Image 1: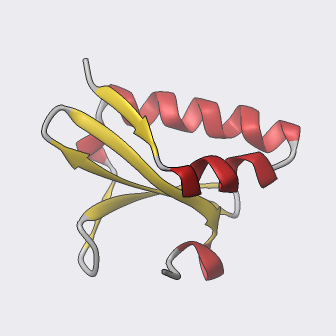
Image 2: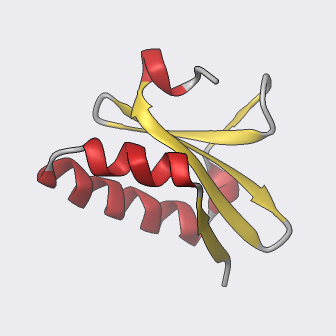
Image 3: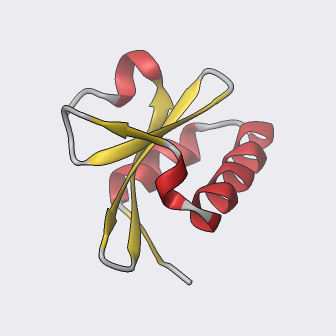
Length: 80
């Protein structure tokens, strides 16, 4: 079982989503936790990306911990 960590930025991003998208976000997070290595590895950052609807979830794996970094639309989620 993986330890789960949400960055403050991820929490802020998630709160901006409407109720139905928050439900879909929760389901996507559950799938990530089942097998975090199965999704797209990003070359330009040390992490992974998962698409759901028009949104992306960015996360990284550190040891036994899955760290959720950002969630948002593609055009803004990769900004630093």
